[in-house]
Amino acid sequence: MDHFLYFVMALQPHIMRMRKFPGLIIACLLLQSATAQDPNFSQFFVSPLTLNPALTGKFNGNFRIAGNYRDQWPAISKAFITSTASFDVPLMRNRISELDTWGVGVLAMTDKTANGILSTNLLAITTAYHKGLDEDGLHSIGFGFQGTYNTKRLDGTKLNFEEELDQFGGWTIPSGEPVDSRMINLSYFDVSVGVLYNGSSDGYNNYYLGISAYHLNKPKESFAGDIYYTLNPRITAHAGGAIPLGDNSRTIYLSSLFSRQAGATNIVAGGAVGFNMNQDEENPTNFYAGLWTRFNNVNDALIPYLGLEFGGFRLGASYDVNISSLKTASPSRGGLEISLIYTNLPLGNRGVPCPKF
Image (cartoon, rainbow, N blue to C red; front, top):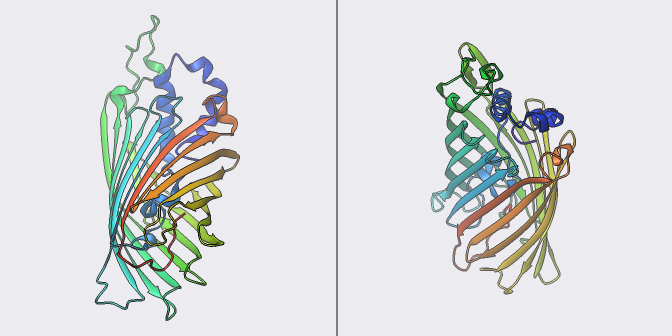
């Protein structure tokens, strides 16, 4: 579950009678963030550098630019808003084996919680080397590394605590909380690694399997003096494939993800059908329609997806339809997500199939 869902679900029976105390609810949410779980994208397949460092440079093209935007639980004003932007490029193609790929990239992410009371920003440098395993280059294995600089800010001036409430309904009594009326900043560096196998049996279909581990050095965070919380490693396994049908005018894409961090499990599985609208394999115009489902410790959300690909651009939109016990508080509104990827395509070269969904 994204962010602090377990805690919000626990609060659900009390939300109606606590509406007069939004600051208190937000404070509880922020304190729960000490368990430190990463934001998750429903469209994980179009956020390559937050999914697995080993995906760096693994695409058919000269360079790739990707952007993602997620507004989670819009029924709660600006509850969680996450944005990313990334750039990666294969290097030294004329100096290493034509079967191999060395990719480097950069990733930036910003995540704002509770209308910006808690802000997280990161900048990452990532690299991966993909080694061809056969003479046709249809099979490869890649190893990736990512170094990330993180900053977080807690704006305590926007928080209200129960102790501050006076007899007239005002927030005038000092709470004594260490974060009250303070702007607290912290920063740290962490490292992540990943491995990716990519294969094809005929140069048209595709299948892949990857494993990644983020925050291996377990950095510590503190917003309250000498009380520290560990950012737990996030371990992810993901797999998928593409199956062309008939004359390749339609393709079935399947993908799944299993991730675990700080005792929380995130499982997403589903697929899409791609329709080649212009019958051009080298520069296709594709329309995609699909559905994914998120399972956690409870059934969480259905995720319908629509996408359009043209001229190297791929635009995607999805919406989380909440089916968990939180649907009463969120009116089944889980989250809107928009993605945009641009891949600068080489002329006259369809290339080896790479992970797409």
